[in-house]
Length: 150
Image (tube, rainbow, N blue to C red; front, side, top):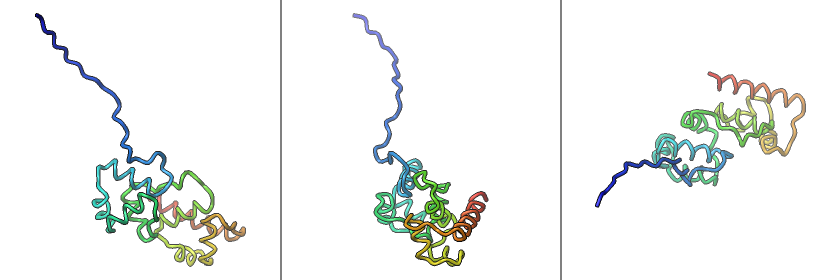
């Protein structure tokens, strides 16, 4: 009886981890993707961001969003400024600019000499700003984009 040994190597694409979000729509999706790509646990990310591990879980599950004061740390962790589902409305651009600058709605409103509720409604797409307010918001967004480039 003859035995033949064959050295055979099968190659295929590694299956995608089911924990990965299918689309990057929310900040929580971005956080989970980057965390998994780096092989980190939620407690490790929490330690890096100086928050409770349950907080990271809440963000990743989109139960709540991080406060503006943590935006700079989160952007540093991600290594980029996450887009808001690819939408480029004025409200979404304003929210992203605030995140880049690490401002709350109140801080942004003071910077732009606007009412805080006006900023909130513009971000929620419930109010369209007047022309002069739009120009002020565009300057604010421009300042955030300049900071983003640095």
